[in-house]
Amino acid sequence: MKLMSMAAAGLLASHLVGAEQLFARAVDMDIEDLPPVAIENGLTVNISVNNTKRKVLIDSRATLLDTMRERMGLTGSKKGCDHGQCGACTVIIDGNRVLSCLTLAATCEGKSVITIEGLAKDNVLNPMQTAFLKHDGFQCGFCTPGQICSAVALMKEAKEGQASFITADVRQDQKSVVLSDDEIAERMSGNICRCGAYPNIVAAIKEAQTGKNVEQTWLFAG
Image (cartoon, rainbow, N blue to C red; front, side, top):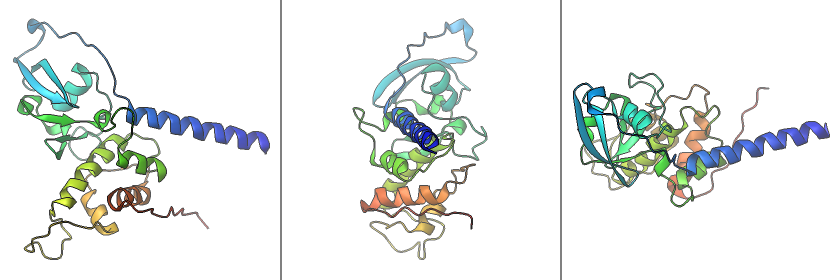
């Protein structure tokens, strides 16, 4: 029993350290630009990605997701369904959450893109990342970058008082929205978690918005 406990503790520690490194560190890769003859319908786009100006030659039909992953080395944003249905590729463009698999990179000329790699500042996690770690808002982790980017943008939407499908009176001008469990579930419905960590994700977002400690609740099969 003692050996099993020690092994379990070691696995948990490595899991948390790995997760924190994934959230906090951006990938630093120098990818050579392709020669113009290697790209059909080529054009050069200038995009600010994670507060760094990037100039990249792309196929005019390339999506932002493929451009980030294949041309910029930013592999945090995941390609799940590639049809805009799972939310794993969610990034933040000019403050708004966007599905990067449905966004042409060419349309991002001059815009600011924030990915999961750009949320932490000087290896200090974004409060949403910290809350996800605390409440175990991820299991396999595949959807986590999209979940967190979506949640960060959701905070801005709530602060601006933007309505959702379950808003009681959309005609009422709200300065800010205090997110209930139902509000969070509705507003995050575009981000799918195949592991089913939804209660933990809701708790993490609620704690990040209120700044108050949210009790961890664990459901066990009885």
